[in-house]
Image (cartoon, rainbow, N blue to C red; front, side):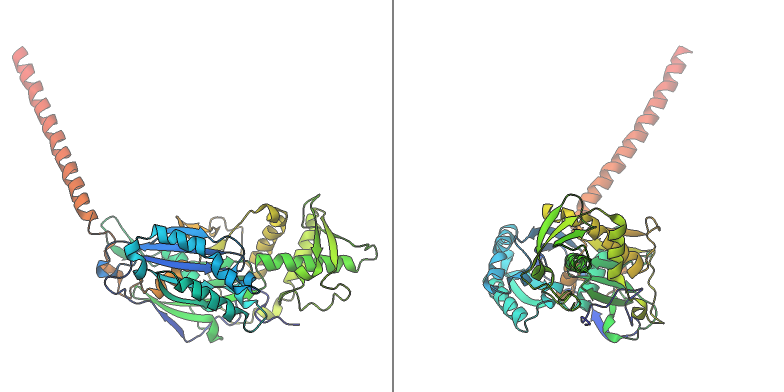
Length: 458
C-alpha cells in the first residue's frame, strides 16, 4: 500500500522544475519589535526560540540574532493527541522563561508564532491536529505577547524557511564589511537537507523550471530572484526509521525456520536487548500499511537482541531504499551537490545510544543511495546543527518572513553597523592617529638629539 508523501528519495525531488509559488520578503516598517518568539513544534520535541533585532533599523536593516532558546520538557505536541490540554501546559515553563528574558515593556510588542512540522501530519484522526492547535492557541493567547498564529507548516514553507535561514547565516545573500555597509555576496547559495524525526526535507536553488509547480518557490531577496525547489520525504526521518527497521527485523526473523520468539537485530550492539510490543512499531502510516506480516497482533511482544553484525545491518538498511528507479524522472534539475548543508539534530539520549549505528548508516544510505551525494568531496558537504551560535533550522527563516525583516532593496544602501557604534570607531581612529604622530615625533627628536651629541664630541 502506498503511503502518501513517502516516496523514496532517489536522485532529486520529482518534478523540481517550474512553479508559480512566490514568496516576497519585504521591508520592515519603522519601529518594528526588537524581539520575536518562534516555537518549533517538531515530532519529538518543541523548542522555543527568542530572536532579537539590532537597536537601530535605519534603511530597513534586517540583522537578527538568536537571543536564547528553551527546550520544552516532554515529547512533541503530536504525542498529546489524547490530552490536548497537556500540550499547552507543556509550553508554560519556556513561556515563563521568555517573560523573564524579554523586558516587560516589550511584551505586548513581541510577536509569537508556533509552527508545527511533520509529526502533526502523521496524526491519523481528521480533527486531532485542529484540537491540539486550538488548545495550544488558548495557552499562547493567555500570555501578554502579540500572538500571531499557530499552524501546521506546509512542507514547502518549512523547506524554504530552512534554506533561507542557512544561506542568510552563511552570508550567501549579502554580507557586510569593515566599512559598515552591505555588499552582495559572490559565494552563491548552498542546498540544504534537513534530516528530522519523521521526514527528510531537501531544498536547493535551480536554474531550470520544474514540471511540478507545488515543489517550486520563487523568492526575491535583496534585489535578486531565487528559484528554489523543495521536497519532503515523509517516513524518512530517524524516528520513523527506527520503527521501520524494527518492523523489518521482526518480519525477517518471523519467517525463519529457527524462529522461537526471539528476534536478532544486526544494527544493535551486543549485548543490548529490549522487549518490543508489536503495536509500538506498527501503529502509524509509515509502518501500519505493511500487510505482509500476518501473524502478530498489536499486543504481541518480541524479545529483540543486538548482534552487532555490520554486513547484515547494511543489507537490512539497503532493503528500505529499494525501488528508486521511478522516483527520479528524466529532466529533473540537478543541484550543485558540492555545496550542500546537511542539518541533523543529534540528541545522544541514553535510551537512543543503541540506535546510533543504525541512524548513522541511515544517513549514509540516504545521502549516497537516496540523493546520490559524493561524500568523498571533503569539505564541500557539511553536517552541522548551528551556524555560528544560531540554530540552522527553519525557525529563523520563518521569523524573517513573518516579520518582513528581509528588505527587497538592493544592499548597497543598507547600513550594517548601528549608529551608536560609529562614535566609538571615530574615537579609536583618533587615538590611533594621535599615537602614530606621537611615535613619529619621538623618533625625530631622538634623531636630532643624537646628532647634537656627535657635534659636542667633535
